[in-house]
Length: 70
Image 1 (tube, rainbow, N blue to C red):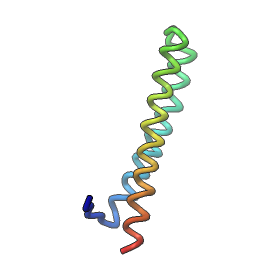
Image 2: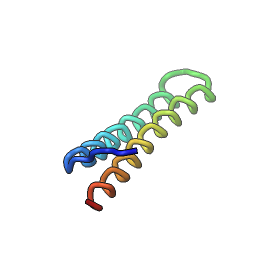
Image 3: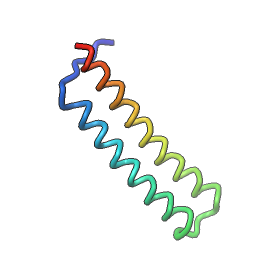
Image 4: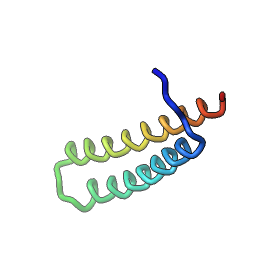
């Protein structure tokens, strides 16, 4: 794979991942305490949100490391 990485793109992805992490924490609170959904569905939803956040942060760190190598 050949990715073209600009200097601003990795930082933007990291900021986006941080925003997703904040939304995941708020979503976890809402799903588990306020929604009235069954526990297994609430756990799945909050885990999915946190997984997306962590994957986005890891992608941003990977892109940042590739940009620094150049």
